[in-house]
Length: 169
Figure 1: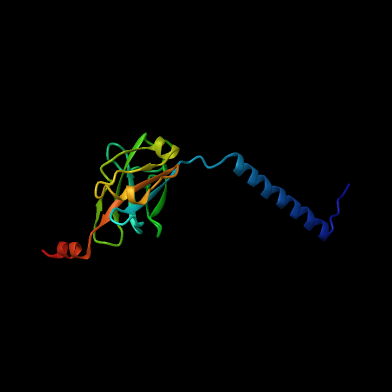
Figure 2 (figure 1 turned 90 degrees about the vertical axis):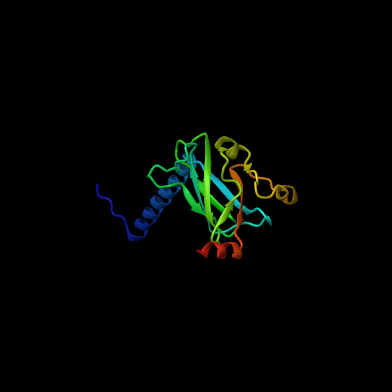
């Protein structure tokens, strides 16, 4: 028995298969969600509570070594105009992590939250706000509340005079 498919019915058959294939892909994507752990880090100016953009944030483990993903790349990123960067942790993240950050369109940043370590489970469950070692009154003035999966840290940009003083030999 031979099958003859006209051009119109062939197109319909092809479109039906394409639709089923796309729908099956969506279903599989929903049943197997991306299980990688992501955290959002917000870098806030310790003096005025405004977000700091263009800050490079690098995550490290307890031993101080920079975290790497499954491909051997460092877990790092640069903050956007809202002072936020979302970082994907390795498939087996450490229980606690630390961070280093620099930049912010100035010559230097005073790291007001860098010497601390943060529990990954706590960040994911409730969110974490780091201690602001540069200005203790800022948290009270601005009522900062982290979201689950969010870590809020503080930095203080150098003034133009401080940057200029560093250039003088």
